[in-house]
Each structure stands twice: as structure tokens, then as C-alpha cells.
Length: 236
Image (cartoon, rainbow, N blue to C red; front, top):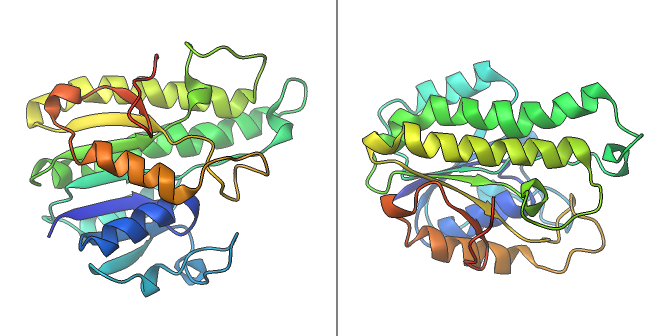
């Protein structure tokens, strides 16, 4: 059975990835900051990873800002092939991120999760991915980090951290290509999760189904690409 490791797996996009891959019989490693909170099924609460049916699901305590926890999980899975690493853990502070309303610490919080955390995960698990059959790393980014999209201002800490994540994706695609590892990033759309707010117009099931369709067809010729959940190619 193929294996997927997902960060931020107990809610929203991460939970839906876990649910769909488990239903298809994949081995799922769900990484969450608090395993005791990885329960419950009411809307807006963490999903119950342990109740997923299909392939086996293992819940790991892993905060992507804690390099010791990343190392612990990587060591516990030493020698285990991971076909697909999904760096999904995310942070959204909200209106406080707009011009004149944010602090340097809020900016650093975003970079710790989206940039430093993603790079630490890729470094820690590249050996696991490289010995797998599929050899895929997928980073969940955002159109907010895209220079090619028209915009008026923005949530500066979040947007710049996602732009940096896009650059990491591009760089990693070169650094690990010789090992046969494909790296790409997605903008999942304005998905209805507890991070997105009331204006979201896309359900997690539709977004994740679209991304999984693209992931299933990925190969090394598509490394370093940036796509929407529906397959459209994104400008950087």
C-alpha cells in the first residue's frame, strides 16, 4: 500500500486529505500538534483521525515549528518509504495582518510555520520519500503568495510567507531532482475551513479531490510547478 504523511492533519484541508487517502486504502501518517485534540467530528472542530476507515492511520505529535518533534517522527519512521509528503500545516492570524496592524512577531509566526517548518519537514523526510515508489513532495501554498495575481494590499505576513514557500518549492525541485523526487505546490482555493472565514466558496472535498487527481498523475517532468486545485497552472 502507498503511504502518505500529512502535517496539520486534524482539521480542514489536512483532515480531508487524510480521510480521502485512508478511504482509498493508503497508509496515512497524520501529524498534529496535539494528538489528544485529534478527535471529534462536529463542523469547525478537529476531525477524528483515529475513526477514519480504509487504510491504517497513525497519529503523530508533530508541531512543524518544533524541530525536535520533526526529528522524533522522522526517526520513528526510519526506513519507511513515504510516497507522498504533504506539507499542509498553516497559520492565519486574520485582520491583524493588514498594513498598520501587525507586529514583527506575527510576521515571524507565519514564517516559522510556512517557511522554516516546511523546509525542516522536507529535509527530515527526503530520505523516506526518495526510497518510495512515487517520490512526491507537495506543499500547500496560496494564490496570496503569487506575484502574477492582481491585488490591492494584503495580509502581509501570510502573503510573504506563502511567496517564500513558493520559492522554496522551486529551489527544492532542483536540489532533489537527482534523487527522482518531484516537488510542487498547490493553491487549494478559497476552501471553507475554520481558517478561511465566511466568504469561502469551496468545500474541502472538492478541493482535495481536485488536488488528488493532479497528484495521481505527477511525475518528475512536472517538478517545480505551481497549480490550482483544478489543474490550472499558476504564475509565480
